Amino acid sequence: MKSWTLRFRAKDKKNFLEVKNGSKPIETRAATVKYQPIEVGDELVFVCSGEKFSKKILKKEHFKSIDEMIGKIPFSDIMPSVKSVPEMKKAYASYSGYDEKIKKFGIFAFYLL
Image (cartoon, rainbow, N blue to C red; front, top):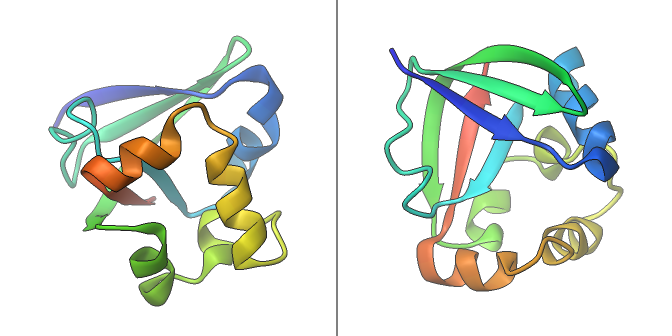
């Protein structure tokens, strides 16, 4: 088992807290080379504004697109604070370069315990 650090920007503290309290059971990241070695059973250490906690990965799935992912996973498990799929896509687009990274590499869904 390896340990990996995932950082949240201070302005995304809400997402960090949703992972912490369990209302966001799935964390996603563009499937770039950085995240490809992460495996089931590994530990993710979440860090935001000096606060941190960890969760274990129960399952990892790779999707070619956000549309493919939301065809299998309810968007509310990924972004519980958004009200619709278009709002979810807008949130992903707000991360610098994320649309291009997802088009090139796809997206990982990490199911957390």
